[in-house]
Structure formats: structure tokens, C-alpha cells
Image 1 (cartoon, rainbow, N blue to C red):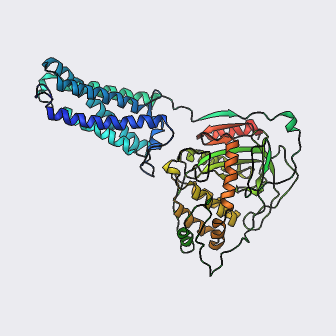
Image 2 (spheres, rainbow, N blue to C red):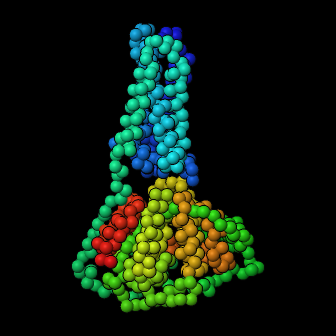
Length: 490
């Protein structure tokens, strides 16, 4: 670089160049991730959650990721730094110094705005974002401290312009209505000749290999009894566990020792609201609730009549004979469905015994869901958590509701170890271990994944009504009630 001449020394320009290059690299990476679906590497946790930050309303300005504007800012800043260091014209260097100062202060003010949003609004942080913001604050400080000729530019005027620009960004973000978080999808109509066919009372178990590619099937699960096979006291824990329900023998051993409470969770969710009064089969099955009570099973139609379920033969929250049943397909590890799950719980509280929820886990991980193409770090234990939940249900159907509500209560998912500990607080340890070790949970999950595919797979969460689906987060109880009333006439 040339010798010092103008606003900044060569050393200051060099330091600013390096910092701006780091900021540009980070902003470029975040821009790519904003348009992708693979998730940000190494940033998935209860506090540092880049996916949560990058998919929020505040990550965009006029529908454009804010990282795009950051890339533009750093590109201009680097260009100005290079220009200032390579020109011998004093007037040009002073103009470029003014531009460097303005861009640097804008980056600094913007950093304070977006860090505040992460801290006080989102309550989650993205360390990539924080590092990029640290770059902005650093160049802003250097631009102020490193000014060797204060009279050459009106820093107050430039600072006011930069602050005004960032204020405009904040106002636009606040004033911009949040985009709808869900869309309405319609299911294709089943052909009339098929609709007239009578479905035989042949119940297909989720514990068998089921082909759901035909146009209509009855997905069902045989009666579940608590008199399941126990692990012999002198045999300990088996060394090998089914590959389709992966979990270590050490964890099974732990659950035989102590249990402790923990807070929990989140879930990806595909929900199906169905009318039990429509297309009801007379075939009845026994259903365990709270250990001894039995209820008649209900056959319900979903996905515009292309699929049928028996409410008493799958995990259910509430009365299987309720007027309205919601079939919920979810992933305990997905954070974007927390509000939807909470909204569904509020709907259940409002409608009381008239509403029940069939809860079917659909883990979003390639280990147990072949519709997933890229694994996100957040879903690393999705399959394990789903297997634990199904094992709880197999061991004690009456305890499933309490366990499920515990899993879905908090903003973040519990770890598999925490879920294990909670499970053995609620159900018999040895029976739970036997069920968890078996391949029944993984076979049940395989069937719920096939139902998820039939519901269109893709984006989640989904609230699937008999003929349509709300795809995306639904935080309005009024919307859910309207959909129930419009689709079911309740």
C-alpha cells in the first residue's frame, strides 16, 4: 500500500480490510443459508440457534435477507479501503475516507440493532451473525478513533446519516406486516368410483410393513396391552438394539437405575383434523385408557377420503370417541412448530372432551425418515425421541398424554437422556425397556412417515383437514377454530 496520506494510516486501512473481509465472508455464508434448507453448521442449541434467527421476520428487509445488504455494505467498504490505499490524490482519498467512515458507522449501528433483536425479541442468537456484527462494530470504532484529520470531514454529519439509515431499516422492519406463516393446500379429489367402494374391515398394523401407495387403506394398530414381555431380571440389558430404533445399551441401562425430571421440547407437526361422524365404520376395537377403561374404536377418513385410521389403535390424547379428532404428525425436535402445538393445546382446552388428538411422531432425520434429504443438527436425536415416545405408549397408553405434553411444553426439545428419565418416572422400567428394545416403535414410526408422505411431506408443520391443509406455523386459535367449523361443521 502507499504511504500514509489522508484520513487513515496504512495500518488502519489494512486492519479494516481484514475485518471487512471476515464480515463479507460471514455475510455471504449467511446469505447462501438464507436461501437454502440445509441449516447453518454448528449453530443449533437452546441459546445459539441460527436457524431460528435466520428464519424469523427480523431476518429480512422488504422480503430480502438482511445479510444481502450486509454483503453489499462490506463489498463497498472493501472497495473504498482498496481505493484509498492505492490513490495518490488527496481529494480522492478524503472522499473515500468519508465513504469508509459512513459505511463503517452504518455497519456498527446496524450491529447494535440486530444484536438487540436477537437478545430481547428472538431470545436466540446466531454466532455467525454475532461475529459479523462484531466486525461491523470494530470497523466503526476504527473509523472514529483512526481519523487523523478531523477537519477533513464532518464526522457528526456522516454519523447522523448512517444512524438515520439504520433507523429507517428498523422502522421498515417494524412497520412491515409479518408474512403469513402458513398457506392453504387442497388435497386431490378421490375418483367417484373409488369413493363408492366399501373398505373391508381389514386392519393394517403400523408394526407391519405397510404399502400406502394404493389409493385408500385403513391404517390401524392392534390392541396394546401392558402385559408385554419383560426383560428377565438376570439377563440385564441386551447388547444389541434394533438398528431401526437406534439407541445405546448404556442408555437402556441408565433408565433401569434413576429417573429425573427435565424440561423439554419442540415438535415439527403435521396435524389432521377429521370428522368422526363422517364415513364411520361399525367395526369396533378395544382401547386402553388409564390402565383399564375401554372405548370403541372409530374409523375416520382423512386426506379427502384416501386414508382411514382407527382412533383407538394409535397414540391418542383425549377421548377416541370425541366429536372431532386431530391426527398430529410431528417431530419433537423441530422448533418451528412450538406455537402450533401450543395453539392446538389451547383448542383442546376450549373444546374439552369434544376434541382429541392422535399423536403420531414423524422424525425429520434420515435414520428413520427417507423423505428427509439433508440432516439438520437440531434433529440429531429426532428418531430416538420418537422411539421413546412410542415405547411409553406401548408400555402404558394412559401415560402417553402426560409424557407427550411434557415433551412439547417448552421451547426446546429435551435430550434423549432427559426423555428416558422422564419416561421411567411414568411407566414400568422393565416393560419400557423391553418395548424400546423391540422393533415395534421403529415400525410404528415407519407407518407414520408413510402417512406424512401421503399428506404431501414437504414443509412443516401441517394441519391437515379432511380435504385441505394449513402448511406452516399456526399461532392463531381463531384460525384453527374456523378451519374446524368450516370443514367439520362443529
